[in-house]
Image (cartoon, rainbow, N blue to C red):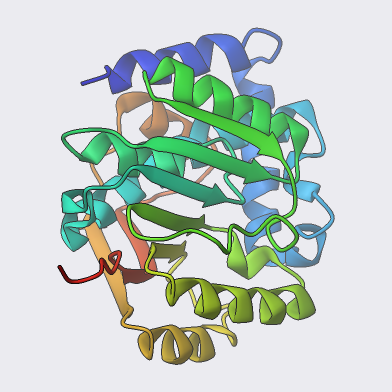
Length: 255
């Protein structure tokens, strides 16, 4: 099992090489404010438009999402699926698929896609540093959607669908519904807050008709010391790891 503490320490060394902690704290405050109060900037790439925000995203939100998805995967027993591949659409820094892959006995390979070149490069570092077989590339979640996937494959959207334009999200839902009929698994993870989630009930209903389940989760927050320190400095207090999910295990043909 990879040493998660070593991975976090490597992240800190790399991203703080050219930033002071006070600069990182200011960037984390700005990033947090954007997610809560200035969401119109997200679709345009605002969360990653400066070195400080990229460092804050990688050092705080990346590990926070890793821990949350790790807890979700365990609660859903999703790691019991004998997966061969996880296709991570909107992969960000790669933490979502990494958390899922590491929860199982045998880690599947990962294929990541993200529109942001920095994020795709960071995802490749994540896979390498955690000893995973994976490759991320730049691409578009709608245009590059893997519609031909079948059993043995899982499609992951981790903190991705809510950030899409409405028209893109509507077209993506049709692709996801059609893809599930070929048998792959699916996991969608989003924050539990209801802001900007008018789309969620339709997705839950449409995907529920294909055998998916929708859940909300609250897990105790036992953050590593570095994350607690970053959070405290930015005035954040993540007492719980929370998420809402839509999940379906893959559907294999009966013998």
